[in-house]
Image 1 (cartoon, one colour):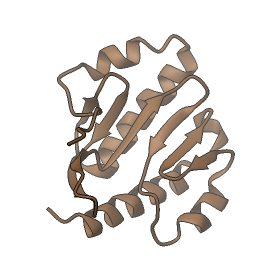
Image 2 (cartoon, one colour):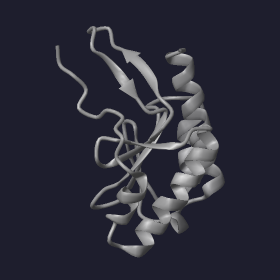
Image 3 (cartoon, rainbow, N blue to C red):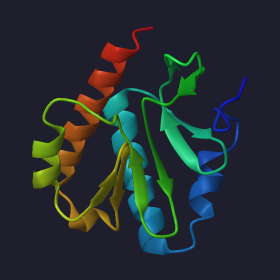
Length: 139
């Protein structure tokens, strides 16, 4: 059976931040790490080499594929900071319309810099996302 490639590791979050060459992006990621840690109640952990995750849940799809994932996470990608949230939850679209400058895909929120968004709206998105994941995948 196929295995999940992105798993929790012992890699250093500090080293992850140090590898971000652009100072502003590094500062924004550090601020987001502090915020996501506060909102989730979990310390940041590396998932693979490029995702900072908070908390953990086990999922199992109808196909039988299962694995673990962080409740919420972030990565510094080439074109944006990516925040990983649940794909669907109550008020997601309404909150996204109030967030500010961003792009989305199914379970990813892409932002360029923190000044582009409303942090209080991001906080609500993250909280609702975590609530939905816990509802779908109770431990």
